[in-house]
Amino acid sequence: MKQSLDWEDLRLFLAVAKAGGLAGAAEKTGLSSATLGRRVSSLEHSMNVRLVEREARGYQLTPAGRELVLQLEDMDEVARSISKWRQSGRTKRRVRISAGDWTARLLLDNISEFWSPDDPWVPEFLADPRNRNVARRQIDIGIRSRRPKQEWLAGRKIGTVRYAVYQSQSIAKDVNPGWIGVVEDEAHFPTGSWIRENHGDQVVVTVNRAAHALSLVRQGTARMLLPMFVGEAFADLQRISDPIDSLQTERWLVMHQDERHEPAVRQALAALAKLLKTDPILCSEF
Image (cartoon, rainbow, N blue to C red; front, side, top):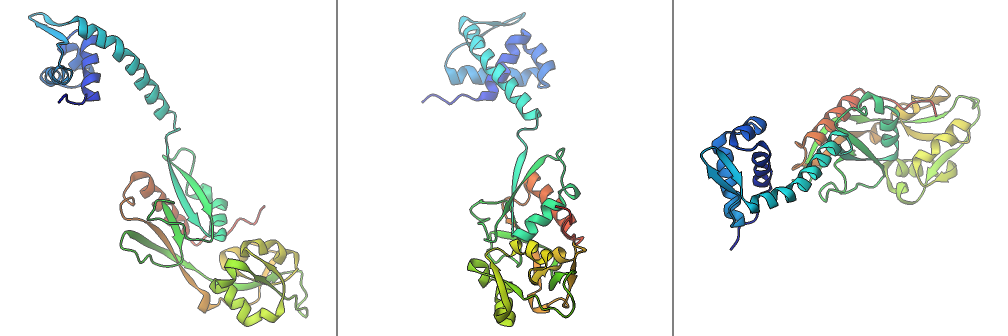
């Protein structure tokens, strides 16, 4: 049975052919003449054809060797094109980062604090209240509110998220503006349940994504439960409650055990952890 071709043998044979012998190819490739000689012999064995005549003055290509060189020159041109493509930066590793709406907005508002276009990785943000599957490689890094339980996942705690009630500074102290409630999936989140159980009869408007409530709160339409990294970012909002201890959550970076040491993912993890440990707030400019 014929052996499969080794592309590295082909590359080194082309280097020998272009250099006119082992010595010149050794200088160009950094490999010893003995190693190059073995690789050429290995290629001949794989192809079952003599490619060079070994003479006292050096290697001379056989007709089959000259024909192979013509074929390999096209391959060499493709290899150079691929090398240029790699060096252009278009092959940077994309790191998919999943987070809830608020946290995704937090990362986008502070992106210059943890990433620049010169970095060897490119962030791909997925704002989604659902926990996308890390195990199935739907994402590389998930920002979660709890430690992962699956043994194939790794987690790194990087802080906490606190919640409080906010309303517009424009609302007079003797006015009760009512509440914004949430419906559909987010109605079952701890924050949605807290609003329903404590102020359900005071809800005047509802949204299906809590992140959509910020504009309503700033307009003075109603008050709302907000993460403090959101509420504290806007001078036109006032906090009208203490932090609600029962709603405080942890903040975790979650990744697959097998990929957490991959260079691009490792760099992204370090950058995100450095930012989030400072407990940043949203940018107040739209």
